[in-house]
Length: 68
Image 1: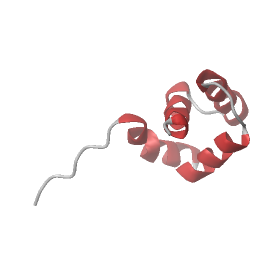
Image 2: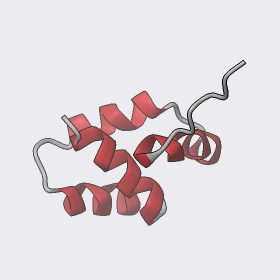
Image 3: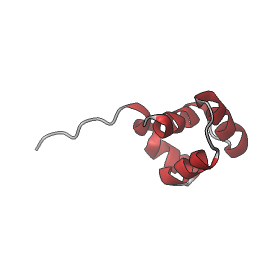
């Protein structure tokens, strides 16, 4: 049986984000889409100020949101 590859990058934060804030990742993607076109750090600041997320968690969500 092969070991599962270790999740890296922004997605590696997702289990702790869901556990700490009690919302699925799709909830946060909806919040970010609703915020409209903003720069990375503007979105991070919004998640921190309006939703109480820590910097690392907010940064990971925004990076995932903007990756496409």
